Amino acid sequence: MRTLAALQTWPRFGAVAENLAAARALLGDAKPELLVLPELFSTGYVFRDRAEAISLAEPFPDGPTVRFAVETSASTGGVVVAGYAEREGDRVFNAACVAAGGAALASYRKVHLFGFERECFDAGDGPFPVVEHRGLRVGVMICFDWRFPEVARTLALAGADVIAHPSNLVLPHCQSAMVTRCLENGVYSVTANRVGSELRPPRPPVAFTGASVILAKDGTTLARGSIDRPELLLARADTDLARTKRIPSGNDLFAERRPDTYRL
Ligand code: ACM
Image 1 (cartoon, rainbow, N blue to C red):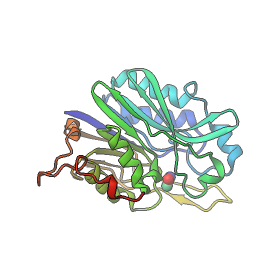
Image 2 (image 1 turned 135 degrees about the vertical axis):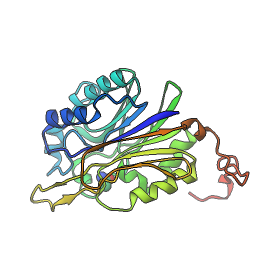
Image 3 (image 1 turned 45 degrees about the vertical axis):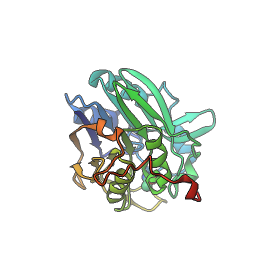
């Protein structure tokens, strides 16, 4: 059994040090094998333009959010996946860093940008990472990637036991849809969403839906957050069960796939 965790936060836009300290305080002494934080949790979400995104972005792995993830992974001994704004040269990405055992392992750059994000960020072009640490295989996607079922499938086919899913959800559908992503792929998932709202004119106000959720491979809810409070969600899960894709009927979800019949 392993402990999976989602940290549901309420960042203040632009207040990186404050947002990191708040996350650290919320985690307390917990030592989950997997900790997931929301998308862009250190900066806030509603950037006015690309210049503002660049001004708050950090290089991988030498910035405050990645250092936070590395230090936190050293103290928990587990994997930490955290959303942040990543800068490389004159490009800027909505990214998630992956740290484990005190080392920065990967940075995933969001492939499917949502709405106004397309004005502020460059789209990533993969690959979707799966990292292994102490026998736990963690795949990473960010928020709106859920709307493209190919992403979760790609991660599951690459061997992920759990999908770590930093999010800033503004619509109510994803938390339910993730049940299907788990069922169809036989994986666990940790969707770490944020709460609160941001008012950054001239952009319209944005309210976030909270309700972070940790799901089992059969779609069962293991933990669910509130819609309006920062909190730490913890769930115990036998993630090794994701290694078999056999379901009670005797069918095998992966062995019985028929790529020869699909047009993708
Ligand atoms: C989203 O992708 N942040 C909705």
